[in-house]
Length: 132
Length: 249
Image 1: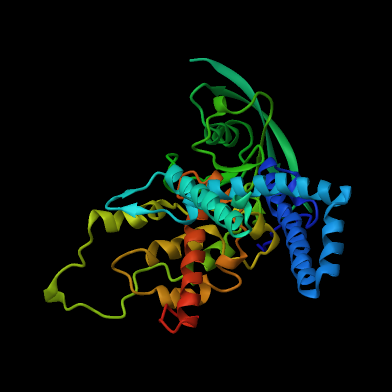
Image 2: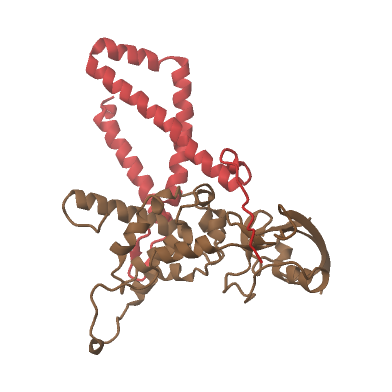
């Protein structure tokens, strides 16, 4: 008897709408777009700085526009979602075994939060943030 | 024992008669302690002997009876009907695999991928017999024991969005099996497996959706294994750039 296996095609554009789990995963992936755009904006600032005070002032003026401020707030919230959901899965990626036992996942995630705060504080210090 | 009638909506596909799959419904009187497999067995024994599906142990060990239950891959022998929401129970063959007949899928691709990661102990140096066994401490065993619990039910492939979109992806269970042997203190085959594991079709096709671990009936956590291999492979890459060895490719 000849075989006739049936292949169920899936939509490459709407597959993630069927299950909540897939939708949340895609939401996590889409956050990268906002963070990518924010990074390009920062690079534009560095480029403007290298071009002199005039160019940098244009960059600063652009940052002050309501549209950019709104984008930055949205990106901030999205970045928090991205970071928190990412840190919550770090114990999967880097389990730490001491003797026979593995460290509880909460400790590994907490370590990432502490590192986040320390790195942020260092950057804030380097930017002169603690000098008032 | 309390009984309730449950409607099973089962995807049927009979290759000699059907051009595409279709749903057939059955009314099944279910006992309170029945799992989905019991209800399907009732259909087979009392209502429709033509229904095809795989099962063997009925105790979540053999991995044969995995299927989509209300849209999620699960072992039908481990899914209690009383735990499902009221209303019809939708039963389909495992997603992301071709349907051979009714609830039976073609697993050739999965089997081939399991083989590709060389899932066995590889030794580059052999120990003379008179030196005895390869001893392993409890801590060394615990490092990989979780990954030995896989029963090859393929629920993870069915849940994996990357495997659905990229059929070449080696996939969760096979990569986890590679990690299981890479982590084994008796094994020396990591470099040999790296050609497959660290290829584009290997760990780097994983987007860390985590669906594999969510659905795994044995709590193997394939997502964890794959992310650990990504880190190990990345460390290798940097070590090689620094001229400090670090595996191959």
